[in-house]
Image (cartoon, rainbow, N blue to C red; front, top):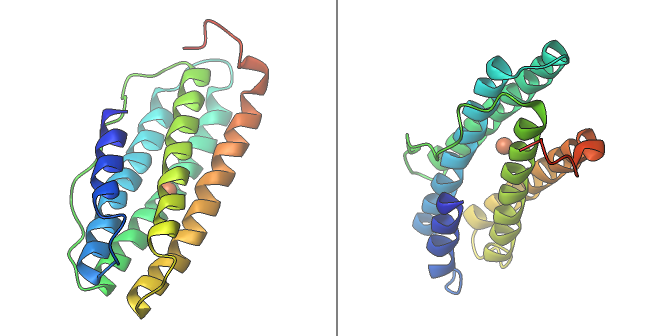
Amino acid sequence: MAAFRTIMAETTKIKEIKMNTKELIDLVNLDLKNERKHLHFYQNAAVMIGGLHRMELREFLEKEAASELAHVNEFSELVVHLGGVPEAGINDYPTDLICPVAILKYAIAMEEEVAENYALRLRQTHEMESADVAVAHVFYEDQVMDSWKTAKELRQMIRKYEDDAHAN
Ligand SMILES: [Fe+2]
């Protein structure tokens, strides 16, 4: 959550001014650190997860990790195409979750966080003042759809456990 607040504070600073390519690269690099976190979280959760449905959920989490790897590549490639260098950093994530409901709840929070970040990116790039900004805008349209859908699907998976006091 602290990392999320940092991202929001950093992005709010440049929200009001017209986007140039350098600022765009900085934003995409911020998001890249979150995408890398998603990749590592799903990969770690896939091996840590316990319970009766371990094998099935492990497969699901590995599939999510594969799709996050594709996102990491897409964000990195966008930075390169914009003339920047992809950052190597990664945002923090819990490595010790075992409970399937706790894992899925964390994944929901994570996906909803980035869906909101990408909605903000769409507002920040909506004037499409250059081809670079226009391409980033279209790029974020795909990304917000992907994270939003994943969050909704995850919510559906844990619907019957939402009031379970032990699932934290
Ligand atoms: Fe992603």
